[in-house]
Image (cartoon, rainbow, N blue to C red):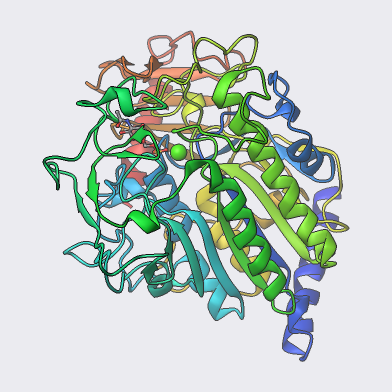
Length: 509
Ligand code: NG6
Ligand code: CA
């Protein structure tokens, strides 16, 4: 009965949003949507998830004012495939070339796709991406960093973009606004290569460690920008080079400007923070403040960022009409390639919570991430939702919320779980697929998790992450054993066979 009432309430609510829109001229009645997509934030990195030693009051307030999910997942344990799935509603493992993208990759989302922002655009939204992109830019020849950089976000459904093109640790270390590098001096053109140095005389992290303010622990020993060596080689573009210390400030400024400008329209902002990815270089306001080294400092900075976004919404009177979703693209990692004291200063902070693995892994901490949703006056405050939920469902769920349309052939893996998103039910997804770095797939149904056999390595030695690979099938009961310590595959061979079959069918879909 309660369920039925909830459903009716939801139907009336969605209907009233939509009729208000159809009934003109109350265009702004459609809710704004802000998706705060953080980078490498672990399940336990946030105060309200119970195992963080680092205060995150602003993020915790989102949870206090909204709903906190305990079983929500990114689709993948790394960035590019998670973002691909989020924006297309399609599992990345269905498409070749969607693994971690090099900084000179071409746009990996075909321009014919109606993406999540594209769908919202058609439903009357102004759309923006601000922050980390990491989905490639340019055509098959790659991006023309010195000219018009396209196709990119503007060609796949965004009205505005301000990007860290790949990651903070990959060249080119410049911002791209819409189709152009910001502050580019035409007389100092940018050259980028991922195969070898573009300027044989230029210092690199490998040759010139004396020039570094942060040293690599693995990889990351190529071109030096701002005293930090990166992945890949670049030269030129000196006036355009970023300072890592400014990332959070600049992204907040851009988001504030966008929200303020668009306040009369329904808007969708995909706000993709650099924090807490490497290199972890906090602004001086946060550097040294956490007591947990740079990783803790950028976590404070991320929390500040979230507070700023809420503040600008409040200032513009938008909190009642804005759905805020806060989550991460994959789980935590401690040493991801720089000697930044993250291991040494971890102390009693538990970025994994009770889960095993981490970024890159098939174990739960690869994809189970913080997921918080607030909407003042619409979502009951202070609730916890235990439903199994996938970020791949944001596409269809947000379509349902906004009167948008999932067109035939688009978003094939996305299902409408709007009632879950708004915490009107905790009906779980029927099943969920997780993808690890080496594309080992896991299937979760209810409390059961099946990890398919894989010849991949057991451990990522560089990051010291258990990857969850095993040549034998694995089966875990996540209710009894959330830490995935007891492989029950030999105890329940029939369940293993069933889940294998189901996964094979999903793969072939
Ligand atoms: C890895 C990088 C790591 C990080 C990751 C992508 C090395 C040795 N490691 O290849 O530092 O950049 O790619 O992270 O280069 S993600 O969050 O964008 O997926
Ligand atoms: Ca990431």
